[in-house]
Length: 112
Image 1 (cartoon, helix red, strand yellow):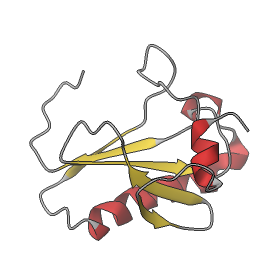
Image 2 (image 1 turned 60 degrees about the vertical axis):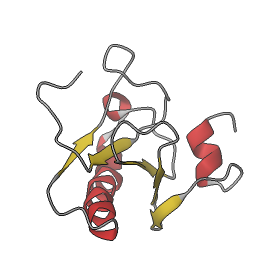
Image 3 (image 1 turned 90 degrees about the horizontal axis):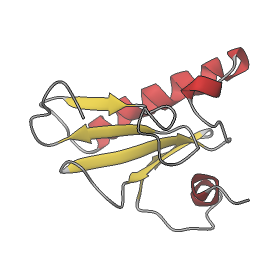
Image 4 (image 1 turned 120 degrees about the horizontal axis):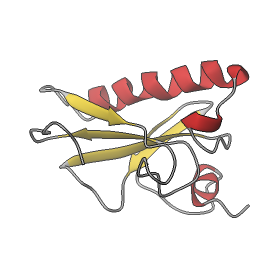
């Protein structure tokens, strides 16, 4: 298993976990871009939103619900942003679907 996020999900690489469900884990990003920066990943490998299939719909929904639960667990009260980068030009650096939960400061628009 060479994917770093698959190895984190399997417990082979330690991560500062925020929460975990049957299909998803959330952990603090090692290179935070905001005071709160948590990654939410499915335990099952999916390369990206761009490669997700119809049979992944429930798991994709769970990823998004866990983003809200991360905000609740970390007492984020003034809003948060969920980002799913897809592909090289979309800013995806790890080829395993993951959502970024960003909060704790004003997040400008447009991003990037």
